[in-house]
Length: 592
Image 1: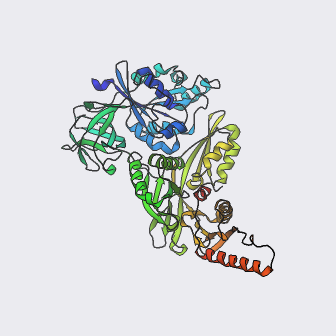
Image 2: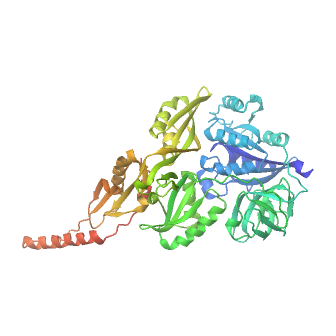
């Protein structure tokens, strides 16, 4: 009977369509958070989330409404964090599909809707922000009804800001969403959908109890990692942590495991009693990183601090992968894999803020597939590991399928931008007479740097983008190296298209000339492919006026001092080392 009174749901939407604001109204109306403690984006607990106005981590909250327990999981909207959304959906029976009345259906709206369909979730469609003066409520309502193939009157209207229509959504959750279907009297099976590290309680796992029930101070094991531990505390989120005596089938809560090793409590694993052996739950697909970059400490003494910090971030971010590397220019660091450029930026900022480490990041790259002459296949994301040309049979690069939603007046500039980035046109559809969906196949490397910024620029901010991996295709790439005073800086090396190498080499040497501080000796900045120099800039030396103290007298006195200075500069040129500022790496990031 208790299980029939539980509803588990999440809110899915495109970025900035009002998920967190609607969640605030839910918490306020149900009394889960006192009014005096309520603030904007209550469920966005990280400083970064509040500053950027985006959700990065999923966050659960338990509420009570008309005798029912409602478990909400707030999800991110940005394409880089789709993996967080998929984990939230696996813990729910239903989803609120939220669309902004001023912007209409966007790329992530479609992507998240398809994710929910794959999980066979019940969808509650809602048009949000109807209070805004520029809202097109009825147009968006009809577009959403067409997408879901329902009547327009079945689409709810609401404003997360003013609270209009929010009680109707809560009532609809109770009436339309099915209760959890777990077996209350069976062996314990709990799905870990997220986790975080607590210095006192070790790994704290966020769980959905699928079957059975769990109480305090019992021994549990992780079926996947075989780790056995005794529970320190169980409870649920309101959204603050609140202790409980037990968690039953269908409930969402947390288990403080006491485990100190983050690898023993993986996201997607199944928790059961230490004496039981039930079938593990399906878990999640192993996430594939799409963008790779090397991270180094400005101060090499902070290497161990960086290693510990990455381990803790990895705990509740399964999409982050890393392995140690070393560079002659930057010392020891890590090669990290990310889901996209925003994900990379968030990790960098969290490392700098939460752990106080000064970092240098190298140019991002993707995973190339190298077919070797001896029949072997090698995956490559480090330019320095590119085999010599005679050993390579052919190279393939990852392509993504891109869906771009744009107003029809911007179709021309958007198509031109995608074609410049080597995009292959697939098809074009119309959501409404004024809104089109363009589908392209495009090399992943062409969208990871600044494609999103350019897309927003050519469409006056109206176009939106979603992409997913679409396999590998043959390509022609080469390694472009940069030399400073004859010394190769391996952290600046990059993999580029063979036909673009000369243009990129020339552009980058010009940029580096502006960024690298002048030395006491002349510095040659060169771009090279193999042993061939394809571009060069010369950074002039500082010239100290060694003749300033001389006035009058024989000219040879001046010449002797100038000759001495010249010899000194020649010697410095041989033994001098150049300090590379972090701006040099940023220049590589923004190479267009």
